[in-house]
Image (cartoon, rainbow, N blue to C red; front, side, top):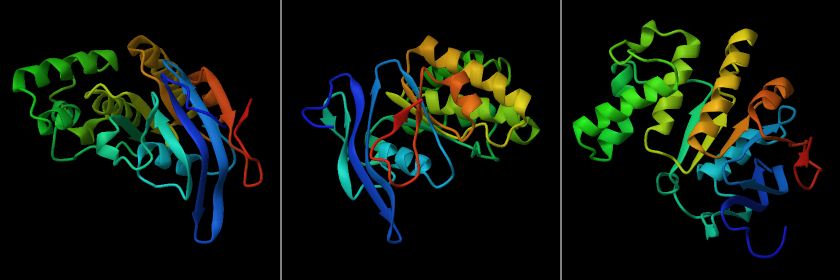
Length: 224
């Protein structure tokens, strides 16, 4: 990819990452449009999660750039990118109830308690968990815990949502149901997203576009 990054989109331009002497990503380029959900799929070791880490700012590439709406974010730390993250493990705080988990980032940012409570209630409705605010997290099912993690990631109104195999530990029926729900929610909120999965079926359910990140040797992601 050459020239000025396209405005109004996430642009990954010629990213290269080497880990332990092995090239994990070789000159990878990708554009994610506004309001678009892109699914990255491919075999283990293809670099899917590594690319997500580069987008999030958790890993600095050896070469290449990351742009958001024309701004170069390559050297910008994660907390300044305003991107949300959801992992396979929900990583909920066990000592906090559901509402406190969802509102954690808002409280850290100094939002008023009333505004936090309103936002938490709104998000629990959006992820189809109304009335769950007082629940302890250890009482949640796997699917419910992932919905809480999604609500927590969406609470600060992220510019982009990054999902790293968030349904990998769930059974097939629940995985399909959550995939459909997440796609609908992201479109309702008009939040662009990059979703990593090794499951082509899940990718088709979630993504507006599916990109297969082949193993080392392919220059750019190949649209499926």
